[in-house]
Image 1 (cartoon, rainbow, N blue to C red):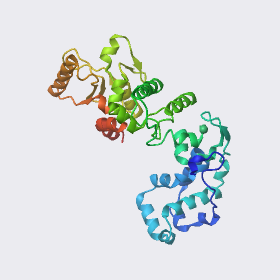
Image 2: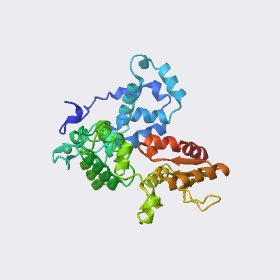
Image 3: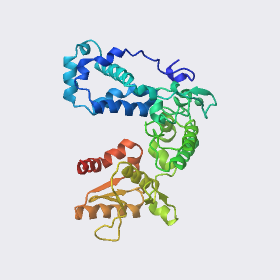
Image 4: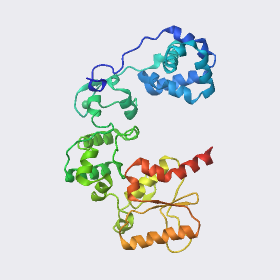
Length: 349
Ligand SMILES: [Zn+2]
């Protein structure tokens, strides 16, 4: 029995905080007002599990040399892990300042998936991170099988895998990576109804092995499910979709790219004209064109693709060509668009 299997007990035992921990002179030497504010912010953000992430947050806003000098000079650090020393100090400091008084009491709730009661603090940190502290609405025994890496069912028929993908696309409105639902941010922005629908769908999720056995690859599964088609064919039938930033997209592939750009704060124009010919690209970011070439294998389409690539070379336009296989994982899409992100960072700093 692990901490993931319980509903009625806190996942983490309370550890006793010695008030003396707050007196550490080696830490007080560099501790400042911003760090006290950080304690308050983290407590309001994470409530009873705030201390789990506090060390990482402290490091983010403290010069590395300050931390290094402290570790060298504090005799405690040669005996214990400095992470723990800093966490204990922070806990005692927060207590001393009265900040922990604002922590709310974990509530008893009913899990809509299994109808069992559970207390909010029975949820381990990885689940809290995925749901958000104010929306701890599902129990850990239900979630542990649905949203962690490698989850999914072993023997799922080809027909059911395809149905699963189509239902998933209907719910999330974009091309899903194979591990959709397993990443920390996947559930965060969804409404309660969307979460419930999605988690119910995850009970039918095929695992990687069964996708491989029945359909060869996730890419092939997406193709069989009909979600990777380019819009040029669909648009003629009037099927369009609107991305989160309001851009009209002609295919799910395009929409997936649009929302990626939007969520990374990358300003993008839709449908820029090529300098010659009667062509338009899917997106323009700075001077770079982005095209989603979703219909490869169709001769007419391939000719047009080649012509576009040729035009970009001729006019010195950087072209990021995205193909269906780039959409099967977040990592692949990220790799393709990574030039834009580093450029974007540079212009903002
Ligand atoms: Zn449950």
